[in-house]
Length: 289
Image 1 (cartoon, rainbow, N blue to C red):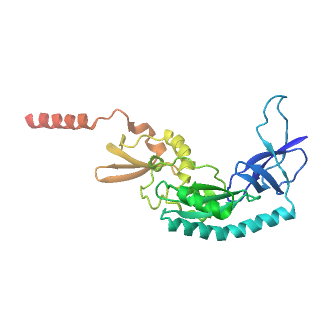
Image 2: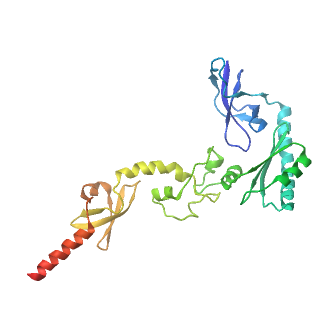
Image 3: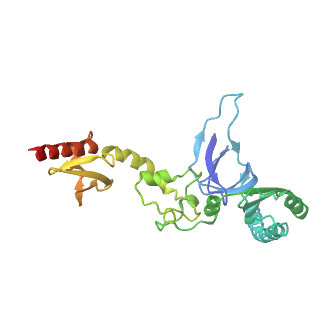
């Protein structure tokens, strides 16, 4: 019987699926051959039985190498300790070459065949000279990865404006596009500093709530429509989706009324220019009389 499960690797916050032909336990440490190389990870999803595809068809997942031993864990910790020193050394070499790089992390694969270096930079970096220096120093494959400010926030973590740990460092696996249009759709004040997260980009929760606001706004009249209420004409200037209160302005008066009170009083075909012309015509008739 084959089993499928998700494995989370350090500093990645995104699990990958692997197979095993024997039972393993959730939370157990395993050694897997991931796209980055041989790595130590933890089983983070429930174990499920997996039916192999028909003969001749390719299996879309790889099998774990083995359950992690005490020696594997020791080697992993040793690599982590050494990478702290390597980070400082790589930063020095980058500064010597004036590349404008900010090294954020260095990671060895478990077998030390590859050294993965992540860095921040304002522009694209030609790091070929740095690569040659590092290859001669560490005698292994070197992978240099330029990351963005969101990736940095995901790696470092922190607290959001809500007081909870950052979404990107807890459960977000991929970054979706966030636009200022989403803030406008939610009728938020366009204060960029307040709408920005620890990464300096627009907060991800704008994306989470955008679909709900779009759906909820279908029950509300469009901002700018006129309402005839108690023989006066008012303009809809805003509304609160949560409380279902609509703000009306007109004749130097502001009203905040429940949506249910104005739904049948909305003037969908109201033309303010036509209304002013009618008043002008009535005034001229009165003057002739």
